[in-house]
Image (cartoon, rainbow over all chains, first blue to last red; front, side, top):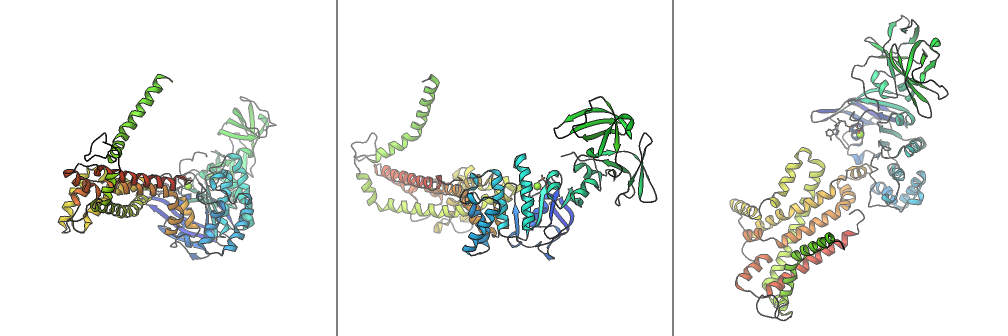
Length: 358
Length: 261
Ligand SMILES: Nc1ncnc2c1ncn2[C@@H]1O[C@H](COP(=O)(O)OP(=O)(O)OP(=O)(O)O)[C@@H](O)[C@H]1O
Ligand SMILES: [Mg+2]
């Protein structure tokens, strides 16, 4: 079991600064996702930890040992790549044996450990096959087994599910998550898919432009983002411009156009500057026009099977509401919206232009 | 059969005839029983092959050429593979420059490379002695073929496999030997075969850079043909054609069955 610490990690490629000081502590057996848009430095972080790239500044610690100058082969890591990177000229069993041979494990023990690893990823029947005779999902499981059979200190995965189709991806999410918990290995997982990050991780690290924007549990990230940008990147968010007036007791009063007053907790981080209010689409209730805190008109209605998405024009701008399919509101109808003050979350106004949703 | 299909197959036959006719004629001429290099042959016999096998000059030349080609190929394989690795994996903005540099002997007329090398080696006081200049010339001529073949088989392979091997505990060198090399082996082999044949065959470089003593086969043949016009020359050519065919077939058999060729 190993803890990983990144201390002010900086990585420059010529003039471009891919990582601008990343500090992160990953606990024993924790599953941490690095989440962010393309080019934000997720893979670079992983490459630095794996030792494929030399760091330009800062430290990487495994259990307080600085390993940032070590060669990849001396770091004791298991890595899974988006392309699987299985050795095509070796059978599945030979792929798994490779790392053990490098570690000079005795032949008998190699056989045992391969058998156990194959069993773990439910591929015992395919030991003698070549990788190209396996499906994408099976190849991915071989890649996992190959990384884990050497019993590394930490496991690194770089978008391992990106090449799989949607259904298989959902299955593999659960599979990887369960396996990780069973083995209890400290894991860093790179993805740009927020759903993946949320469902699998103990902690999600949201990155923008080579910096960590927020690192917290999936619930915390979703309900209490520290910036408008995080709010928009993780899930759908309505960001409302409301009159915000701070009270003395650590709470805020929000004044709605109709005169309604909502009292919400003020986040610790939201000191000074402009504030806006985040409301998640599924946390807003659609009501009769008279019963709502604000009124509006349904501009668009999208049925998805699981729920219905309404785009409502209101006095505070367009608001997206996700409601159960039992609601039957048609386009053009007048509706009321009710907010749950407990679920509204003030965020500092965007310092950077809003990120496109992914 | 439709008329255009007929035309196409006619055209195809013509191309093959054009390519193969000289070879067929050389082989037939070598079987000539007469005393002069003529076509059609005057009676068939293997006598010129026996004459050739008794002629130490040609045997020496073939052995010399084969040794030279083997040496040049060996050096080209190592340098060319390294250059290809650098070009594909690490060169980035310098890639075009690297490629141009390695391919220059292929792009420039052979005679220019030869003369440049001649000047250079006289300038540094070695001249054509000890066959250093000749050997260098052959390496330069064969390098592009190894480089092109190996970089083609490297391209499109991301280096994730090699990195995966590193995380599994392999050193840089072990990862290359156990993972990358087996995957690019067909390209390396093809490059080697090309290099050998080019070196065996090249004339201009050898003509200008050859020192005193033994000469490569093409030079020896040229010298011979200036004063003699017997089918023995055709017999020598036939033997080198057969050697080439054997080499190519062997390489094909060895690597065609490789699953990742
Ligand atoms: N070898 C390199 N040379 C120069 N710049 C690089 C190199 N590798 C990455 N970069 C730059 O560093 C930044 C971060 O890249 P990185 O690959 O870490 O992004 P990412 O978050 O993994 O994105 P993606 O989701 O597209 O994989 C990018 O701006 C990229 O252009
Ligand atoms: Mg990436």
